[in-house]
Length: 199
Length: 350
Image 1 (cartoon, rainbow over the protein chains, first blue to last red):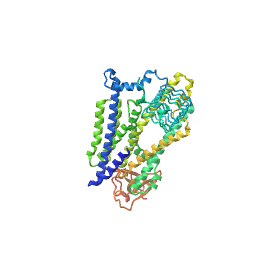
Image 2 (cartoon, each protein chain N blue to C red):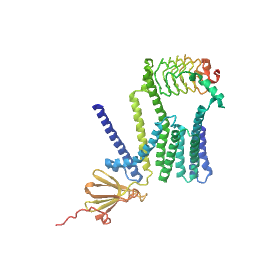
Image 3 (cartoon, rainbow over the protein chains, first blue to last red):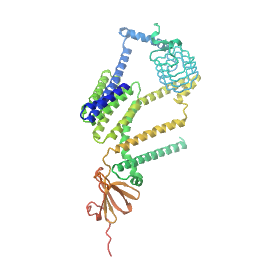
């Protein structure tokens, strides 16, 4: 982004030097660059529309006839626990609990997908088998929390305090952001998604 | 509703009305000040003499068009925010698209090279094609297309309306549009969080689990529960003040785009004379007319004159808003014999 901005600035600054009417040239170059930015945004928007359509098609496509069977089966291993489990006892997806003080709260098996828990006090909380996909747990206090078998894919744990937290069999992936104190999650017995054993 | 509630609400409404009137009055005074400085007339005396009504009218006229724009664009933002974020998606990519199309349209039509609109047009065509091909839902497509259309329309309208000296107006409108489209994704997320909190709270209340009472309390209080209410209210007041200041700056700034904002005035006096000049403002006891430098920018005669209302029989304010006229005295209204409608009754001798 910074490089693109610098490049755009350089073009706006330098291109008019080669034109007769520098003011008009600068105006034209700026307009074209803003238009190119519009094209970049348009590409992002259309790509999202396409990915949504792909997701819809995968959902509708019969498994046995699908060329994507392998991929879907791989994903099903990822989801196997949550699919086979009954409905989570607590649906807390997307809730905003920033700075909440909830020490020792029982949120085991709760669905906290995409929830905001930044700065929350969850010390000694029970979060075993909970779904924490994409959950914002930055600066959260998770000292002594039970995170066994929790789904930590795409979870943001930067700045969180997870001393003495139990992480055995918690699932994480490349997009999981760990606090600086945790350099090797596997040493805490968490499992990378790619290392999950096939069923 | 008890009596105290009713009184509180009435007082609140009155305070809001008084506050709005005061805000518009201050804007009117600022606009008059800017206009007077623009034509080298001293602003202090007219601004201090002007009646409240005149200043409010001046401020309201300047701010009305911006409020209309704000309401129109705010309605669009409200439509997006109140939808399901999953279906009526409006993220920063959509906001950036709408804003860049607006700015590109404005710049291309304001400049001398209209072909530079081509990249923005390609972007719009690409999105339209993508929507046609993948068609996620009517809501999703409308949430993308409507802000882009509104932005392009706004850019084109600004370019057509202000083909000269229109920088402040164009910048103001683009700023309002930009702030709204960039705030909309955040507001949509905030609303989705509120919905999620409400849903979770209802679930907890239905389960009546005593162990989860702290969680229910946290959901009920919402984020930032430890922040003192006074801080919350100070924050809200600061945000509202900032919005009002921004709207005021835009309203006053847009007045700089106008070449001139003064009409001609013809004042007939009780002594039978007439005074012609540039109408400035009316005070409680005086009328202020001036000699601006509209006609001659190097003129050193720029000045204002106040005429006591007790000496005035009639005031005619006329002509286009960019006319203005030099200050001159017309003895016995000889030059304006036809135009003067009210004349003093001749005093009979003997």
